[in-house]
Amino acid sequence: MASRQAKPEFSMPANAPEGLQTDPKRRAKGHNLKPLARLAPYLLRYRGKVAAALVALLAAAGATLAVPLAVRRVIDHGFSAENAQFVNQYFAMMLVVAGILALASAGRYYFVTWLGEKVVADLRTDVFRHLLKLSPAFYEKTHTGEVLSRLTADTTQIKTAFGATASVALRNLVLLIGAVIMMVVTSPKLSGLTLLAIPLIILPLIVYGRKVRKLSRSAQDTLAQTAALAQEALPAVSVVQAYRQEGRLAEKFARATRAAFESAAVRTAARAVLTAMIIFIAFGSIVAVLWLGAQDVLAGRLTGGALGQFVLYAAFAAGALGSLSEVWGEMQLTAGAAERLAEIMDTRPQITAPSHPVALPQPPRGEVAFEHVTFRYPTRPGHKALDDVSFAVSPGEKIAIVGPSGAGKSTIFSLLLRFYDPQSGHVRMDGVDIRDTAPEEVRARIALVPQDTVIFTASIAENIRFGNPDASDADVAAAAHAARVDAFADKLPEGLNTMLGERGVNLSGGQKQRIAIARAILANAPILLLDEATSSLDAESERHVQEALDALMEGRTTLAIAHRLATVRGADRIIVMEDGKIAAAGTHDALMKKGGLYARLARLQFTDGDQAGGGE
Image: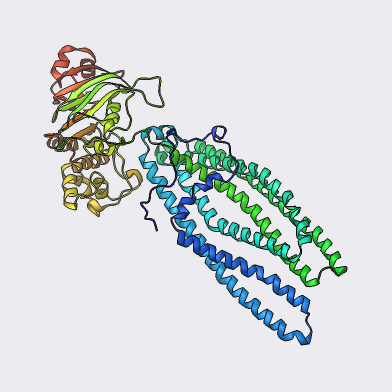
């Protein structure tokens, strides 16, 4: 049995783009169950359970098919007193058959349902693991709600198919095949006439089934749109309420929900029509054939027991075919779900390790260099976020990056973390082009304090430990103290073990940022990236945290983005960004003497009496 860490089974074509295909017109045209074949490797991980399910299935079908044989013998031998012992024996055997049928059906249900649950658990794990590998470019193009819908609703649909639906489908398929064989054995003539009706059943199943599958996919896409809307609105509920937009968004969600319902209703109607067509054609054909069989009994060419046997097998076949027609619609829906999940697994991360990654030098020095780097975001190909940017940072040097919003400051961090690769130029760490090494190795040498701190639904300690999962409780406590997290955590009932709400809604912006700083302290990386690390702190907390950061920056390479120029006056060098280019570089005093953008920004921020280091 494979472990949970087994390699994902969905293949990833080399030419697959990083972005989900959500336009039905641009999808590959196909109207079969081919997407389900990609789930087969997940089943093959558990061959023992599959074999047990098949054995139980065959036993249940065999027991069912044995009943008409007993009925024929009883009818042909009659119910006279002299045949009482014979009749008793047959009914006793039928009771044994019923027991076998019950046990086999229970086994079939258990094994098939177990497989469905396990396959979906493995599939969800693989999809989520793959989603974590996709670079930010993917999430720029794809709504998170769309992704979550595929991860939850579509996998649930597959679980249903692999559980109840697959069980019903396999049972009826085996029963149909067995019933048809026994019909031929019982009466080749009547069977031949019955089989002539099969094309009349299969044709609408194939043709009309295409429409059902298309409608099923449309319904799933519409449902995903409602999930995307909810995912976007609920985390921002405070903003929604502050601007009194509850009614408008509720109506927008209601419209999306109505659209999803209408799409599902059309799909359901199509499946209902398909089911009605199949059942009427099947049973109508059987009625016609049985009328001919009755004529043979009247003419003495067929016994009553043989006709009864044939009737039961024909009923089994018709019932199985009718159930399969319903299952076919469900499998079409599942094929759509599998196709949508396959699109995720086929999406290749833009940022990957080379086939033969170059190891970064040991011990790490903390050198950073940008060499003629030009970069455009995938969603804005016409705009240069960075335009021929070159600079170098020596080990232990403290560099501040300043400039107006949109100048390219955060882009420098994104490229250094290798969330993206530049279209031209090189980004080097300790002399190695980071495209030539594994992204994980690059990021292991960087500690980041972002402007927008992400808080996970976990304790304060676990949120800090995100910077180093192997850190001890003592190390976590030390990092919390250095970042002044304990200043507010100690006032909580459980201290650092206090659970935080989703996204840290019960924390202030400054408290969140102190947790982010504690993470960076715990990571103990040679390169620090500080994106407005103290912007959300009050004056007293900022003083204490700045002291912690000063100690942390000692001996480490530091790049700090700052809008508040008072916080960067002590930097070894200040890089001034404007329109994706380096407008100037130097110390605070040199840039003030030079004039230009930096001096203009400084005059806007500093008061006449606070040239030495005030605030805003």
